[in-house]
Length: 142
Image 1 (spheres, rainbow, N blue to C red):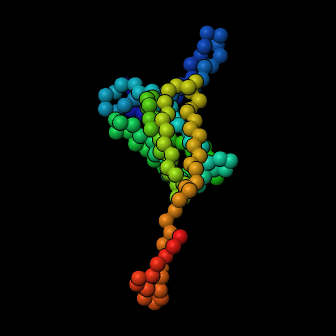
Image 2: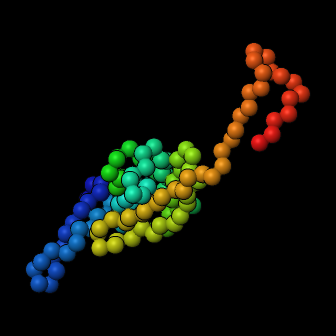
Image 3: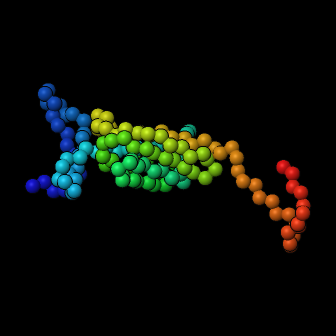
């Protein structure tokens, strides 16, 4: 019996050298082999964007998220099952960014997503007219 866990293996090729690393996991729901890979997110350019929320999800109930905190970038979600996923990146004062990523073997190298949300071009402006009480009937032009 194989324990429910994630395993890495590196097979030998015909010439006796090692192939690329490959990971898979045994699913507790059905004891079937589910292929997985890591998805690396590089958010911001040229510098990493700290404090951005990254979400990765599909239409079948998979959902993972994190907030960027590494000043060098390259944060990742580990062991994502093969498939097609939507990612969303959001941060204050930036327009939300969404895209699609396909997770597959990719020579065992992981999947990279490069995302740079653009600064928002609009913002809310609040006017406080009058002190200590509000001045009623005032006209404000912008």
